[in-house]
Length: 103
Length: 470
Image 1 (spheres, rainbow over the protein chains, first blue to last red):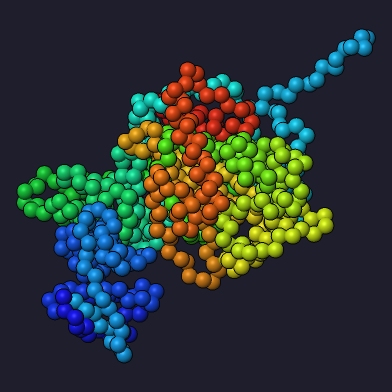
Image 2: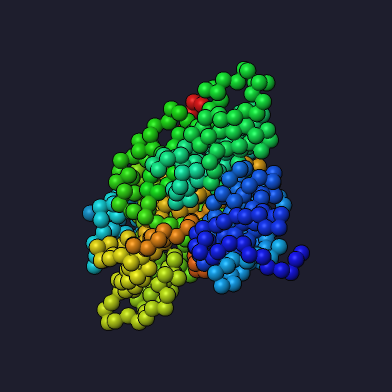
């Protein structure tokens, strides 16, 4: 795992309640703003490798729109069937006007 | 005339007797400063006989199967709150027995309940007990896809399925009706409407409670170690308060509670709080009663001065405390809300398996479902509903907390500790009652005419569905 933080997007692009996905060094990353807190996870569901990033975020968890799996945004843990494997989580920080993630 | 002639006392008719010498619930409520509305002052009891109820319904797995076949398929059940599916595409999976429904919001005012099974080879489209948001329902096996309105959008390799006519492959639905922020479903196409099923009198009650303006502050689920009907009956009477909840009796008019039923599917009790149990009369001062008062949702009240003035009653003081606490919490004026609505425990059963507690200090909902694999177990849930603060944002409904057998209800975050302790006490009885019925030489249970009328009324409805024509 790289020690280096990489720029993801401008902080103003992810206000509270919003989320944004982008490819970072070959990995699809999703950053969510949950009531002012930024959390970064894989944008791809661990169930059948489908896009997770349009999923609904509620109570700091994200639901996959494709088959309904759900993941904890803090830990990446798979909370419900059909997913049984976790998704990756990434460190995230704000430096100046920029959101940065560490893969 | 003989001096020894004893004057024959007029015996009350069966069902008429009440705790001797004690005020009725209505008499207690009539003394309050802010008077109660019609629905509180309503009385609706009738003697329904005193025959024992046969116990096979609690201990025989075949009876449980008959319930799955004839009762759960033909009654209106509370599937979820509207607040958990606020936006188009939101869904909640409601499971009952082997059945499962994806309860989905398809338009602003419209919710549907789709049978949760792919029409290709049967795979569930969404896992049991889950909720989420979708733009379409795609099966994880071969990708067959339905739109939100239930139409077949895609059958992969449709060239191989010339025999599949899309119109015949729409997702089947159960009936859905919305009431007071609750989504009800019924698998029976021929069932009466929810309004007819619940009855006009009860509808006039629920339409005054504003439950649609509440949010789920706490939701706890636990498996109870008894048949679902025993679990429900544990909450249908205040007769058990003296022995099972001794900490409550000093401030609860348990044995002079009021019992009513409305039509076939609704019954209730009103159990007044802030007054001492008739069993303990004379043992507690008004100050003692106030000190002992167990508030259902006490974190709202916080630390309040509880020293009574001369001549002030515990009941009146508690009503004032609760009024102020909830006014602050919900940012509303409650001066027009009666003392009784703020204070008292109102427990309604909606057949088959929902309890509503419209009192403001104990704002709960219970749901009971039979464990599909074990007739000796119940999936029990308790919801605490709080008023949505006026002018504020509606909070998200709470995540469900699942407790296992060796966990106390008090361990659930958001659960009021006094109330959690009460639920633990009820659970302890249920373990013994289920086992005791299986060990018993007596083929029936015996019920009190008045205080246990809700149990009799409920079992009468069970019989109607289980024994009636399929």
